[in-house]
Length: 85
Image (cartoon, rainbow, N blue to C red; front, side, top):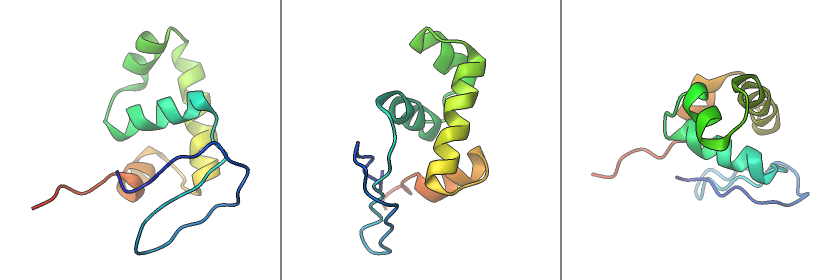
């Protein structure tokens, strides 16, 4: 992935060359963000993390707000690493 999710209080920083994003994400949000980027369904994430699917959805909503995207599709297209040739 192009991004590095850090547990810092730094402001949102995006550099076009390195594509590094520092966000104020919790550990659980980082876990869920990585699952989303790996195209794992909310239902499967909930099962793996032993939480309700609605909780996954709430975490995802918080992730999207913190990263400045509107939905899962935008999040994946913005943050998922493109395959190397």
